[in-house]
Length: 413
Ligand SMILES: NC(=O)c1ccc[n+]([C@@H]2O[C@H](COP(=O)([O-])OP(=O)(O)OC[C@H]3O[C@@H](n4cnc5c(N)ncnc54)[C@H](O)[C@@H]3O)[C@@H](O)[C@H]2O)c1
Image 1 (cartoon, protein in one colour):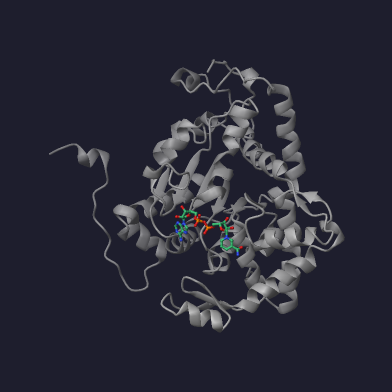
Image 2: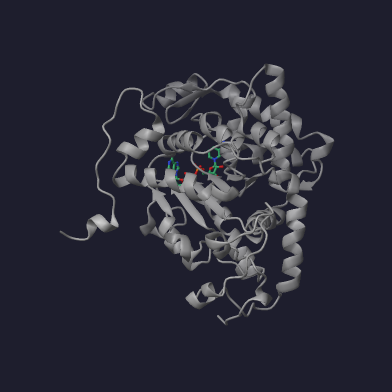
């Protein structure tokens, strides 16, 4: 007999029974192909990414909120403290507003006559249907809100979404709605929400139009780039893991991953990459596009720590299937975590990375790079206190790598 039994578990599923929990179904019957990857993704999320108070960033692309996944999955994940920060397409944030404003979307069909729909004033996103008035009323809400004095300035998109979320929350309360909107939940739970392309959605379109009426609202994309890097640096420099949970791909995927090269390559601060990478997508790797780029490719850019690459998972399946499954699994297998409320610490986190950058960065070419050799690993820094106050040792110590460049052995490119 070969040594297979020493390396791999036997493929022996549990028979499916009536009333089986989603988590038991995944562990017992999702054994191969993308079912197997989804089961691995569930275990990665619950056993590694959420362990030891690790920081989890969620990136969203694809039409997820129109399909109801904001209310069904993303809000429960935020409430349980399983998602600490978010980068989303503007579209997902815009369509999230409909739910918070009590508007109605309908589970229709993809096989309708679009010319007839157009005549009837009906909008279609594949099989999701809603009245054109939903768009017009949501646009009017955005324009109304951003006329307020607090919006007459330049701000990061996290601040913009926090302030907008407050008005969605107030509308939910007026309407007697509860936990319907991602933006409202993010406001309540202090989860920073960024968008990587602020002009590329109906929210951005309304912000742009209002600038022609004298609105002073502008998005500070530089702050967003530095603020997202600051969140990652804050986790890594306090001995926690930083994980990326990617749904789809697109610009939000890169915006989340580029935080590491921003810290290492541009700011010159010693770091080794995000610890865990979980992606659910339909994008293929062989076109060279970022959406389909694998965690292994991300390692070559310093985006992912090579040591944790074997744990990374890509599941090639539709997020409307994987996200509810991952959410049900996580809520069943992991106790809710204390909310990190990173939004409240945004200025302090930004100041921390700024001071490290000014100490170790340069305008000239940075003449060092992270030493990834195994000897560098052996010279891991001595145990130090994590934010919890507990001593960080063992595997966690190996992850304690966000040490300023000057304090580690430098190697030329
Ligand atoms: N009215 C609006 O505000 C509006 C509406 C639609 C799109 N947009 C904008 O258009 C841009 C494109 O948005 P997008 O989200 O459709 O991105 P996209 O179509 O570029 O998708 C990004 C990646 O995610 C993958 N993907 C998409 N749906 C998926 C799913 N269900 N499961 C798994 N993988 C999936 C795609 O294959 C791709 O690799 C965004 O910037 C968005 O803001 C705006």
